[in-house]
Image (cartoon, rainbow, N blue to C red):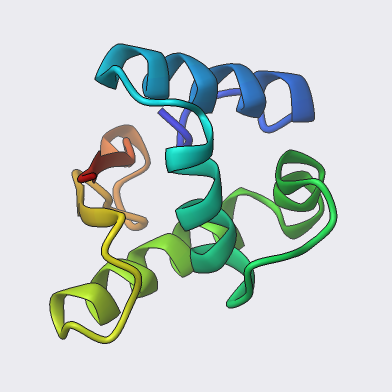
Length: 101
């Protein structure tokens, strides 16, 4: 999703909010763990604006790192895994997050 979308504020926001709705969650249940994974903190400028400034590669790399940390039980429990992320194979770099309550 994030790896192949237009990396613009509106598009990113729509993707995250739609994904949350598909999971039956409020958007905040995704936004707050994403913010923590991308910035290392619980507050920042607008998440989607910040993602555009950081850029796709940095965001995907930080999310992958966050998942590694979580697997080691040293990170926020909201995001449980990333699948199909392969930065060396451009056609296969879809990012999917599994969220738990």
